[in-house]
Length: 102
Image (cartoon, rainbow, N blue to C red):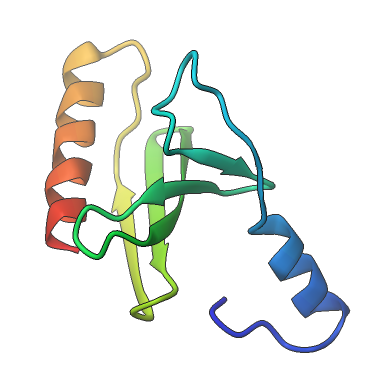
């Protein structure tokens, strides 16, 4: 994703990474929503990271891309229970700790 090809697929990859809008009512003012990605500030480098997560049917996934440093973090959780506050809070805390190390 750091260097999409100069072709229609590359054009689509660049387009989906363009910051499109912000949601200051629900998200930090430094966060941008892209087409398919969320652009978040990198607390270490001061740059930005591309982030996407989701879950269904008993699993949850997360991917974070640091294009500047050419690093990718991918997590797969073998559980997903939206009704469980404990599970959601634990998963978010784990994600935050990993992002701090990333």
